[in-house]
Amino acid sequence: MVNLELYRVFYTVAKCGSLTKAAELLYISQPAVSQSVKQLETQLGTSLFNRTHRGMELTSQGGEQIFKSVEKALFLLENAENRIAELKTSPTGTIRIGASDTIFSYILADRIIEFNRTYPAVKFDLLMGTSVDTIEQIKTNKVDVGFLNLPIADPDIVITSSVQELNDIFVAGEKFSFLKGREMRLEELQEYPLLMLEQNTIARRALDGFTKGLGVELQPAFEVGSWDFMKKLAKSGMGIACLPREYAQHALGDGSLFELDVAPRLPVRSVGVSVPKNVPETFALKKFLAMF
Image 1 (cartoon, rainbow, N blue to C red):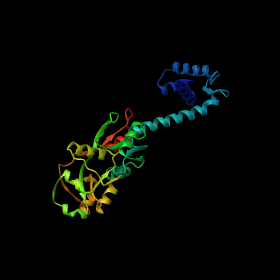
Image 2: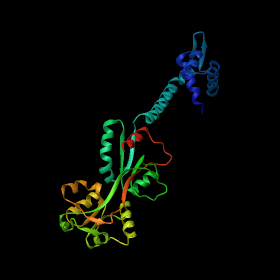
Image 3: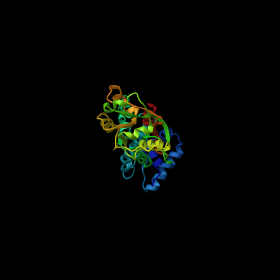
Image 4: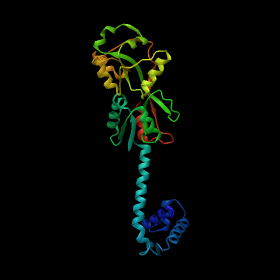
């Protein structure tokens, strides 16, 4: 394979028609230009230029045969280099984000919309799944950034920052209005039907770990796969739900759900940011994460 720089020298000489002018453009000496041309001719086994009193002219059997192809190849390479440079200095390209549908809805949606208004050239590839799914996507470089429910004990996942606190609370609908304003102990919740996330979720593991540490084992009457579905069931009176206050603000505001006064309060969790290891962040991704 011929050295790419030899083709650059060949193309510059052909465009200038002069070894001297080519040397000036390439910031190398004229003998170095001449030597590069000779080296390329030797490797290709053909003469590329006719040396005339007017300067350097392409030979019909050598230089003219490869000029257009070399020009096209160098143009494509220059475009590729420019695209890489743009990724480092301006928001372009695609940002692949992994997160749960709840994190997308309650934390990321407004930021994505705002970012798109400012940088419409940037596209988004949104991969929805549980935090467990997102962890796997981060490990296999299928996403550029993952937003995860914490805590996570995976040694292969590095959390770079936290973007949202989550305060888990117990809420209920009108059917359980007799519990409003009443102070309750955590163990008293066992007397009522409970709505919880499925066991394979990080939020459920955190809840179970905390309550078991206090000697309380809460048994759900219903296990669900999403916070929104849980809120719907709670509003209908099917049970007392455990979910982040941040995801229940609207329902708490309009009175369709109320917060129970339960002691002790559950530990504060958060949503963290993680990126694949040893993968440089694009300029667009840095700009997006700066919004948090």
